[in-house]
Structures are given as structure tokens and as C-alpha cells.
Length: 88
Image (tube, rainbow, N blue to C red; front, side):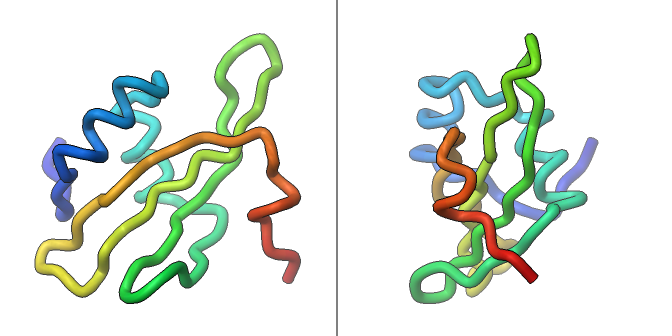
């Protein structure tokens, strides 16, 4: 599948270290549950993802949207959903 973003070396390393597949990153970017302004020109694309056994984590994909194509600068998952989730 072709995508219209680039994944930085750091983000690839973090995905491998944290056990977050490219498929999960693409899922979040294609259909984010929320997009939140982060620092500078970055945006946090985030969704709740099932990692199996009923364990849900908030996957956050931090994207530098000032670049063409946009660049994924880092990816992580957290169980501290309430810390990052924005109520509408």
C-alpha cells in the first residue's frame, strides 16, 4: 500500500522497540479517532487500539505536517489514555 507520508528513522526504531506495527500506524493515520495539535508544526494522530487479550492502548503518531510529504517523527503507545484524550 502506498502512503503519502514518510517515516523517520527514529520513528521506525521506536515502532520496533515498542512493538507497534506499520499496519497499526497506517490505521491510526488513515482513520484517527482524534487529531490534536502538539508542539511546533506537529500534530498527534491518536486512536485506541486493541493489542490482544482485551488490552487497549492509545497509539499516538506524532506527525510533522510542515514537511512535504508529512513526516512521522515518533510513535508510541500508552495506557494513560485520560492524560492525552481530549473530550469534545
